[in-house]
Length: 297
Image (cartoon, rainbow, N blue to C red; front, side, top):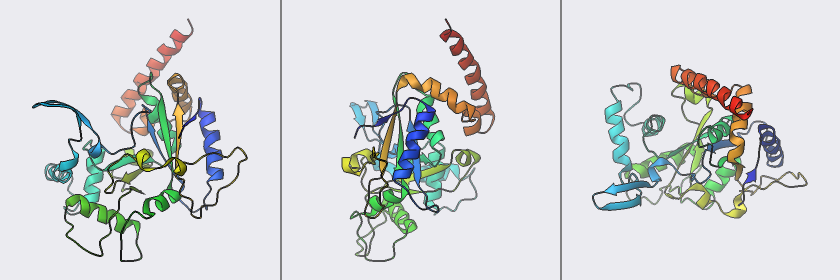
């Protein structure tokens, strides 16, 4: 599916407004989540399943080095971080996974945000010479898509918490044969515990992967992408699993979009509370001034 190309903050908001109107929900529903990537070639795939470049011990090329040792990686983080994180139960693997993700450990979680401007900022912030993308996820339709003919279950009702718990059990390798087991193949979305202020200001959400370790765009077929209607027709949500949309931001537009976002205080200082964010924001201000000066000549 070809992404929708935009060139300014205003254009981004205009298209997003049309998208929300056509794929509407009730006022109480959680609607869209967003992920910005600075390189449009980056897949929607958690760190634990990504390929890494190896050039040692006669192993050359890209391999999924982390995937086979996922539980071992998380267990080691729990052991070594327990001296610093004392308020989390040893058995609360999901919360430990969220902490691990927060501190750069590869997990089966993928970061999203409920704030589209946050995603647009992360899309434009780095790699100014490369086109970026902002992915849009329709939460209600995505849940329908996630559960559609993709899990086996003999108990009901099934809640999102039960689905996530089954994914954690699979990750731990603790499932023996159980005719009533729930096996979730596709990712599901959820709102995590906000373990620090950065997650609050970034309006964090997560996708947690099930047993299918492909990227999300590999799992979603072309007919399951949201497409804008030129007539502005609203779409009924009944049996509609079109859940994914993609913006393309050309590299030549990233710098100007960042300047526009800064007007609304979407910058390093606001998204990374603390001295590091303040320092990077001040550096950005003066680097931006230098860039503006160069453009005048």
